[in-house]
Image (cartoon, rainbow, N blue to C red; front, top):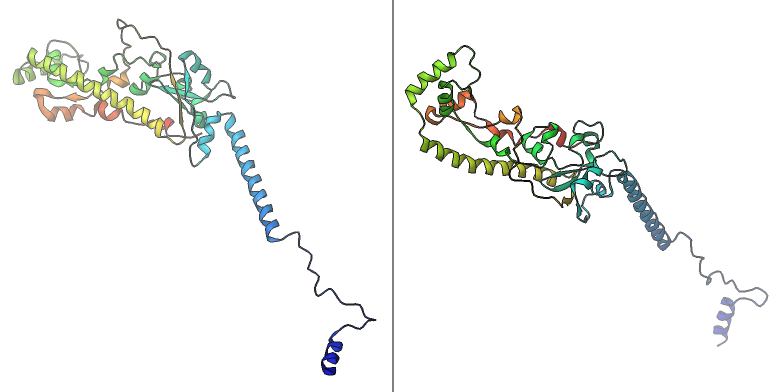
Length: 300
């Protein structure tokens, strides 16, 4: 018993010496604990995200708020804007605080990302703020063609029949074969006509019916080509639709097509066969209309 007491007394502090409580006192918490670091990192990340979005907002503001989508890896939903042709003209790039819009077949696209092309001073500023569907399809860029009126555009997709052109040349009319200054063309056409014979009226009527149907299909394809191009272009955004148009009078005269459009007409040999088709040139509008000018490929 006395041995146990002695061992305790050896381990116990003496009355004159205070007990050392440092061994049992908890260490002060560090202000940079794991929890604190996590909160600080989260706050900094949130601030950087907000700052980045704010910078993108300011960058896109002049080009239109909807153009913010061009800076994102995804597209935010955009409300559809309905406007008349008179309202659309205000978005032609003259006002730097408004986006630049072009319309094709009533569908409005924000092309502010290509401001150097469509804005003031750009080579294609004439497309901005209007629906120039006719010009897109025909590649006729004169002022009268900067309209949505497509009457007569199907003519550029109507084929030229060489046997009919030769018949016309033999009668003294100049056609696809060119200008006949010396009369040699008429002489050659008469010889060719003797070999192949004239095209009957019934055959011509059949051709006109088929050609009209084909031309309408090809015109719709050319129109769809340009609509799809802008719709699928990541730099441009569909934002609305043109409304409030009164129907155009059926009795209106079609706008004459420019030479560029007329040269795209496909050529068919008819009785003269495929060899003459190839010799004269049969690329035609069906192939040429799908071409893509450099100005719509993008750029800023």
